[in-house]
Amino acid sequence: MAADTKTIVFSIGTEEYGIEVEHVKTIERMMPMTRVPKTPPFVKGVVNLRGVVVPVIHLASRFGLPENEPTENSRIVMVSVGDLEVGFIVDSANDVIDVNADRIEEPPEVVGGIRAKYLRGIAKVGENRLLVMLNLSEVLNKSEIIQLEQMED
Image (cartoon, rainbow, N blue to C red; front, side, top):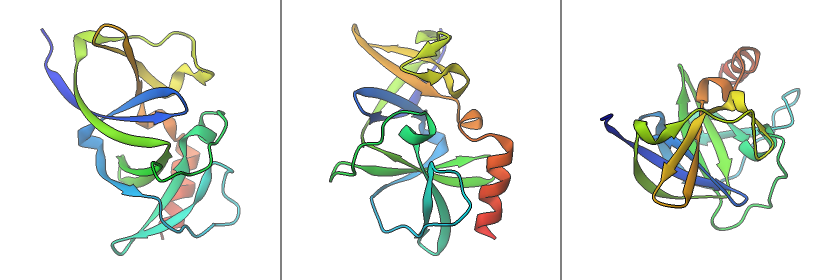
């Protein structure tokens, strides 16, 4: 039997997503952002997080889903993608659960309008709860990573 992995659970709209906790640096409340010209529309700007400039991406926009207006529950999930730190704007983030690798299945071709390449799989949690596990290396493609790294310089 595979081991459990601690997973941060967050939501975009009515769907729940998961990222392994080892990729998550911090979860922050919404904060002022500085817009950066000539970036993709899903890049909302950069923030100064304890002296480090971090690009922030709106995950719903990245996935082609409608963006909800920020609320007091909105959060920025700071993650590491390779050597790059990126913030993901999500509608809420308030749970850490154990997910067993045996309970993660291959993603179907299309899930909730999100192309399967962004997904590592679908985790079955409990009896009726499904969690969309993100494939962080695919959430940003290589040219976007280079563009974001140049923003940090």
